Image (tube, rainbow, N blue to C red):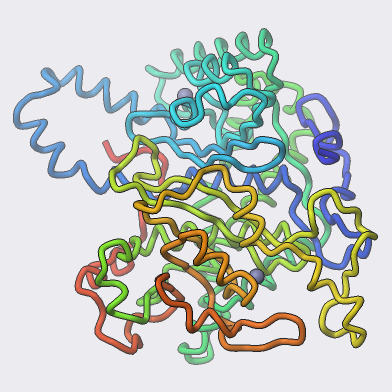
Length: 502
Ligand SMILES: [Zn+2]
Ligand SMILES: [Zn+2]
């Protein structure tokens, strides 16, 4: 809550540098992401959720065309123009500073409408983080539900202002309506971006390069490994800047004027804003390239008996990778950047959400018990000789936080899965099993290790839960399940662009 008070509101305040809330540690040694930046990054990341429905239409569209379902061409052209004009949007729903929903637009529904369907009046007093300024149709419902605050990424809005002249007028009208709804609403509609703390980008770069996924891959490459990683990162930066930044500064200013942010068009506010946005995009690209789409690398289960059971079937690799990157983003909220976790369940049927059959259950990262002050507990790691002043007995693990603050109950008939950046420790393994989680996607660096105050012996022996760790499928110990062979990791890059193909 302390953070909420100190949050920077770029719409009304100057972009001053308040770093205190972002380190959360007086030592200042390891930078942390602020909650606001974390939520913002997650909203951008949700916009990039692998599009489930773009895999469907090709054949079905042809069918529809053949039977003339849409009638005349004019009508058809209008529908496809509308689709192009509405940008896919990511959304993070936050209650009491805890994430209670992660959504993205589907083919039929905007992210804001999906949140209405999923949460209804429970949206009251929530904070919503959008990857684009929502349209008037979404905003009126959200405002009506009594949300507390709506934050959005200040680039092209949901109803794109970058489209052709014919739809530009409509987009402008919608932006006007949004402003009107905003000025009459109790909810605070604003841009919440905080400058990153010193060394944050550097720290994320270092830890991303050192992470086990990259290390495993680079071990198999002849001495060119550094190029492989930075090439991948450069590609991501370019891709995300195209999606999340308006490339021309003039055009960006035009958009800001239209969406009621004219006070950000003057310098230094404008250049600060652009820099801020670029830094966050860079951060996202860096974390995303730490779990790259590379050759045969992905998340596989070592045991064939396990995968053959229906409820153990693995996710498409691109979705597994997406959720793991989400967990890695969460990890930058901990003091060490190591452990983050995201917890999803899989419906037996596809839902209306842009995430297809997946829905969010909870997430967590390592932290001291809620409400504790910095000086309440020891902060030393195992380099400290005196065991009594080490932190390990006080830190609540990512798994434990996710379990405690989950926002949905776990249904035994559904496939619930966690994505955790590190191998779960012996304290957490029985919790995971006891909670009825069916699948663990995890890194496996510490498996079988016993460290001074924490051990990882039980993960290897854990039964009844399928474990998917990162492998190259070419070096799996046993023949793999046949359906896994056609996994999309062999396909060209997943389509990340917001709008589905016309
Ligand atoms: Zn909308
Ligand atoms: Zn643990």
